[in-house]
Structures are given as structure tokens and as C-alpha cells.
Amino acid sequence: MMQRISIVKMISGVLTILLTITFLLMVITGISEILDSFNSPSYGLEEEDYLSVLQQEDYTTLYSMTCRDCTLDAKRSTVIESCQAVAHYYHAATLYKSYLLSQDSIYLPRQIRQMEQYAVRSGTYSNHIEKINQLLELDPTA
Amino acid sequence: MKCPHCGAQIGLEDNYCPFCGQVNTFAKKHQEDMKHYQQEFQRTQSAVYQQTQKAVHLTIPIVFLLLLLILNIAAFIFVSNSWKIGTSIEKKHIHSQLPEHQKHITQLIENGDFCGLSYYFSFNSLYYADELDTYTALVNASDSFRSIYELLLDNSSYYDYAFSDEEISQTVSSMVRNLDTIFNIEREYSYQKELYFTDETTTALADLQNQTKSILVAYAGLTLEEAASLPDLSSKKQQELLERRLGQ
Image (cartoon, rainbow over all chains, first blue to last red):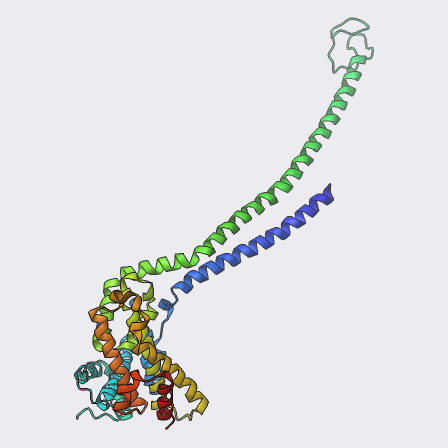
């Protein structure tokens, strides 16, 4: 009789372990699927990320970083806002150059207005405005 | 009871009669009976204890297993519905910020920032919001524009890396697919034109298509005439033209 009980105990022990593992796996899968369904708000960038890219003068990456860092809840420091202004300036300037070369005067005033706005907002990093102009061979005085 | 020898009143526990001193035979029998009953009681008690313990030993794991089984079923239902739960939470979150999202989208369209629009939709999961369905076609075209813009700007500005013919061919193939999306977006969404092509989105699409041609002139080396005729060319001719220009 005791032997039968120990066999039952062993089987129930194995089943308990198996059921606990499957339970935990299912709960973890469920939670991860819930988190996956709103993956983007967790995307966050620090000042260092922006400054590192800005230092490399990789403005295309800076612009795409800025666009990714667009969740409404995110709080951004003055440094980040200035870096983002440089990124937006770069984007506006690239389009300005495009319209200029395409001889499309309709959208030029819009791009100029944006470039002026973002140049003002670039703050401490306004030296990059000049660098962007040089890179894109733009003459802001023209 | 009475002593069988002298008839005096004696107790059942008295081994000898206190009056005549003779042996109390009833007491001896009584004690033997009591001892027997006590042993019987102890045997029964231990048997009951053993039975109960056996039942407890089996019941606890069985109840625990049943509980785990129920938890597993609940977890399975949870997993099956987890995506729905997640999207429903996300939809509520988006809905609570809808006016601000709408304001941002309008601003991006007014600025002609279609890369920004593409990222904004994607990183705020706005495709969950039914209220913003009207921007679906525009955002789809903006995604394609973003690919072209990033590709051209990355190559033209910073990297002196010389692309092989095969790499150029693959890149251009992807660019041609994106151009097809941008210039033929109305065909893709023709099943519900009223929803996807409002005055606002139609104007924005024209701006986007114009912007695409402009960046191809500025950063892919197309002439104005080539850029203007690009939407009318077949995919093969677009591929040839872009390969030729980007290869230069």
C-alpha cells in the first residue's frame, strides 16, 4: 500500500512540475504579447544618444532618431530639443535643396520658414546649422 | 455489587473484599475486559489514523493538481486573448490622446514632413485608431517615401562606400517598388476611395509625389524631364534609369 502511495506521490510531483512550468510559460507569453502589441512607447532616447550622433555629424540618423522619439508622453530636455531642432533643420534644408534644384518655387517658402524656425530653436548647437548648409552646399544669404 | 462470599457491598475495582478478605473474581474479569477493550480501541484508533493520513496524502496533491489545471486553462485563455487585451489597452491610450495626435498629424502634413508622418504613425501605433483610418493611404505612401529619402540621403551625404552593381540593382529594385506605391497609391486603395482620399490627404499626396520627384532630382541625379516622366515609365525602365543615374 505504501509503495502505491509513493508512486502516486511521484506521478503527482512530476505533473505538478510540468503544469507549473506550462502555467508560467503561458503567463510570460501572454504578458510579452501584450507588451509587443504596444511596443513603440517604450522607445526612449537619452541626451547621450543624440549628442553622439550629432558629434558624428550624421544628420540623417539624427533626423530618423528624432522622428522615432515622437511619443506624446516623453519628456525631453533642452539639449534633446535643441538636437531635434538641428535634425528638423537638416530635413527642411534637404527638401529646400530638392525644390531649389527642381526649380519648384511653390514649396520653397515653406521650407525657408521651417529652416528659420528650427535654426532659432537649435540653441547651443546652432553651429551645426552652418555645417548643414556647407554639407548641402546651401547659401542662406541667397 | 455484593461479595459472593460474605454478601457485603463492594466496588468493581476492589480486588479483595474489604470485609471477608476473599478474592473479588468480578474485579479480575472486569480488569481483563477493560484491558481488552482498551487494546481494541487503540487498534481501531490507529487504523482510523492511518486511513485518514492516506486520504490526506492523496487529497492534497490531487487538489493541488486540479488547481494547477484550472490555472493552466485560465492562462491558456489569457494567452489566446493577450493580443486583443494589448490592442484594446493601446486603443484606449490612443483614444485618450486623439486630439493631440490629430494636431501633430496636421502639422506634419502642413510642413510636408512625410518621413516624420510615417514614423509618427508607426511609433505611436496609430494604425490601431479607426478614427485615423483616413490617413492610411497617405501613411503607406509616406513609408515608401521615407525608404527612398533615407536611402538617397545616406548614400549621397556621408559614405564614400562604392556600391557594387548587384547592390545598386537590389537597392534600385526596392526603390522602384516604393515609387510604384507612391505614384499608384490610389489604385491600391481604390476599393474605398471616399475614406482614404479626402481633400486633405489628396493634397498631401500631391505634395508627397512632388517631393519624391524633387529628391530624385537632387540626390539621385535625375534631370527634371526624367523625374517628371518617371511615374509614366514601366518598372523596368524606371529600374534602368535609376541604376544608370545612381551608378554614375
